[in-house]
Image (cartoon, rainbow, N blue to C red):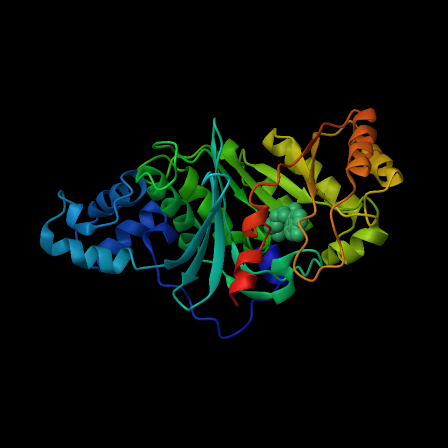
Length: 368
Ligand code: SAH
């Protein structure tokens, strides 16, 4: 069965396929691919160890592989997927955003955020996005194409290499948290995103060995794909970009709401919470005089009360030319207070990276 997301949202025609990469393949497919290159299948495990466990970027270091086979295996399984256009940093270099150019010239972004106790990476799942949310920079340009599984995974591998190589101050570290909150709607690129979650979380050397509990997949609310995701058996967190508790407003802020309503989206969220045992994160960008009224906080509180939910309020990061801005501090405080009065846990997201166009899609937009 095709992924509901993929069935529903066609990708523009004529997009060239990214080159096949080790990280696109399951361990069994890797052995077949290695055999097809004329090498012994067990070398698939060696190459996997170099890529996923050792984060080796130079085949010359693969001392367990005969020199003659290295180039052939590297060429066949580890093609160049992306190159850095530029890095921009802030917060004393603890936040670093990277703009990548993919093999076909497409631009995507990732962000690495270092905290005292953890390292979070925010990654892209599509080049552009087809969901058209009017406050989001990525939404303005539309969808260019889906990223391949390897293009998603490699953003993390590159981040891990930078941490290992001391490019991010604070000494060597591992990536503990991954959020699919960069460019794109992850559940509209369903199979590739699920493949990426497997590569990220499979134990070394098959994958990177990151805990599923550290991964958050954020969606606009593609209900059939959310239900399918609940059946994968992952312990990942699901984030739902709600932004309004009523259909009338949500139809305008998250246009896909005209297809799947607030009630259906929340029901699918509770199904996921039940299946995964994890609280769902309800994302709500506070926009001054648009969605920040006290009555909307009360309505949201009533919808979420007694469910496995946590609200993450995000002060709107205005996109260039936007007529909207973040809520007044007193309205934000009242919004929090009302949600708490319904017994709903709520946090206000820290706004790291604002001065480097940290909001979704802003860096790529400024480049093109
Ligand atoms: N397509 C997915 C994931 C990418 S966006 C989704 O919509 O959930 C990650 C989060 O950033 C979403 O909650 C999105 O609504 C929010 N976002 C996008 N642009 C923003 C902006 N300008 N200010 C604040 N939050 C924004």
